[in-house]
Length: 172
Image (cartoon, rainbow, N blue to C red; front, side):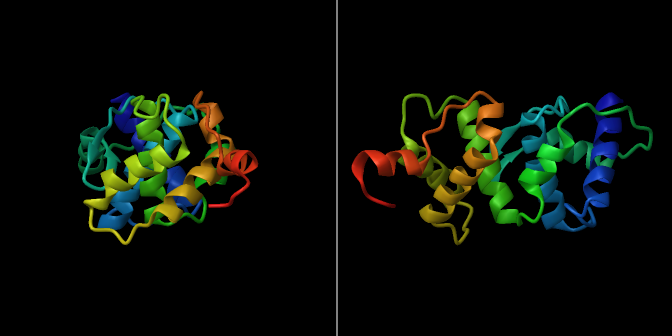
């Protein structure tokens, strides 16, 4: 019951702030998974569990809650302003890549690997989703997550491209 209440409140918050549209639309439904995932990293505490699917991290529990809505909602204590700063104006591809980057870090797939390795893992995970995805886009999303502070919020140490450029004197 709590999870469904939280789903209703959070999706209302997303609609009111123009982050998501009609949940009858497939793309908007997909975005909700990525938005919950990112919000959980900023303290939402939805309780959803996530798995990797073809298009990135998603939760079968979110699918359930989308199909079985209720309309009473408890309060939320999470960093709303930070969340909106991270996701406002982002398209589905950015959300998919950002969620996948965060999931790779969360699962520990990024331990003791460098920036380019993270990019390659994400590229390989999402490349099968038949997206027009390139490594530069993934690098830019990773840099943006780092610059926005989301990686440090979830205790991820990320060496941004700028640091690598100082070491080798090149730009990527």
